[in-house]
Length: 66
Image 1 (cartoon, rainbow, N blue to C red):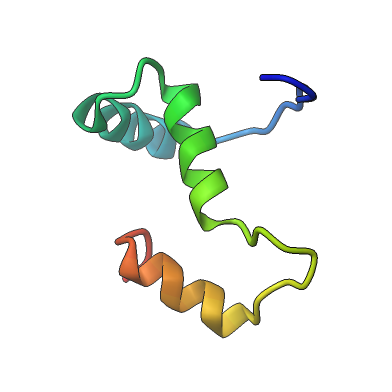
Image 2 (image 1 turned 60 degrees about the vertical axis):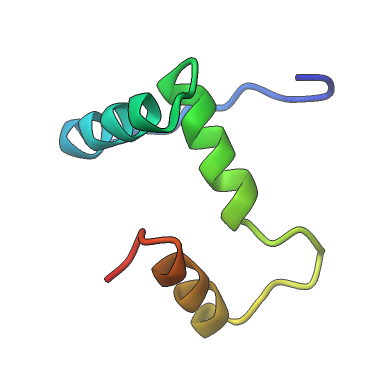
């Protein structure tokens, strides 16, 4: 990606396995691509961050939280 920086994060094995399966089902070329997609679609787009409750509701609507 143009202008991107490489950062490393640690994801526990069980969660990574779930993300791998979700990436395959969603048709993404890689697990990394899927994770980036999820982060891009759930992270606030503007500099004014949403409230924690708004973020929680959005993640629930996407099925990431119960």
